[in-house]
Image (tube, rainbow, N blue to C red):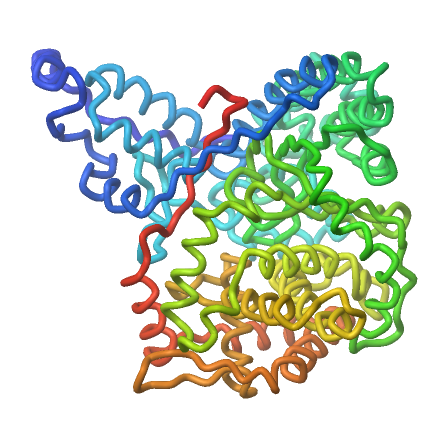
Length: 608
């Protein structure tokens, strides 16, 4: 979806004799090369990669049936499609810049400088890096990334869309739909979308009225006007390919795992309808064998314009029976935990929700990285009908290398008497209840609006903050029930503190880091945390743990219920401040102690 007024920046072409000389001098990437303008230098890329922990996930697939083993590579192929889609939707120059990088790497004889940039592209899922000082910097010759990414016109300002929606309020449902691409109304775009409908009659059939709207729009196009088309039309070639492959995998699994097969068939059609209700119902209520998968566009974190557009992900996981059995008990307590939350009126919670521990086979798109868990779907009308599914990624949660990175940061930031409290089980159970926390609390505002419509880009910050706080808030009741003993409670609470520690001041667009900083500031203000300036350490006052968490949770739930965007803005601004002391001083201690800042994941199933 590249804008017609902007072209991909071209690198300068090296003279032939220079390229030949470089290859002769640098047959195995042993000699430094000077890259064309727009490419990050080897020195700069090395600084980032030196702080990158490379992980390899290769779970045991021997328990899979023959049909499941045959289905795995087919589903991984869908994942590769989604990976490209994710990169495209985040930056319109991503794939062309990546292709040019690979060509340059080949031309120069695979020097370290270009191999590093290939790794950076993999690490950051596109051509823009987040540096050690938390700045977004293109490392390939591309434009700066914009808040709306590539699911809105690249050069659009939010005020333009706001003005358009004020004049044409009937367009809001399509412009702000979770799975549409917003375009400017120019004839080339409109004709291209009409051609897509002509070339793929199934899309015309599944989106009745779209062709007629586009034809009418073509008669009166305007540079200042906008329209929206479904993802299936904007990315038709990709999603038609995914449709075919998902049906192929479903056929392989039909006699072996009927529920999973049906889910894949429903999801294939969902991708062309841009309506996931059928697939989500099959996903949440199905009883699957060894395999499970997140497939589609769900999370909206990358949309920093409105916070409503979802981005593509696929996560293929295999069941971990031993760890799954440890979480079954909590299903019977969901209504009880909902009823103790500090808000009213409480809702009725579905008790039989699927919760399982899995090992990651491979992740793609928005899911790629060191994500510890998933709870989906997100759309409130679907979750009210069918519930949500929780996938805990056990080979991420229990990875020893990841834990050591976290423990190093925790020990550098807090007083020594708390160091032994932190262990991997604390992360596991806090994460479990964080995901369950998404299932609890308000679904709608008091006046009946969905939270994303009411709170716009604030919705994700408040939702993740709510889930974090619920995980800590219910720990008191879980201790009373005997589910936590004292060491496990302390481990969960230590995990909650480790969670809020920041090495750089986050931007508001960084959802998780912003809500973590907000917790730290609230805890400092209310006395759960105290900063010891002489030792440059944080002191934890455990007697204040529950009342302070309850107080913040109460405020967050009230904001969600009210749907007051202005109040949410003020709350976020108040508690996301960053000062020299304690923030910068504690951050410096953690950075001085760290070995790694980033995690680059490779997958055995992909031959990596």
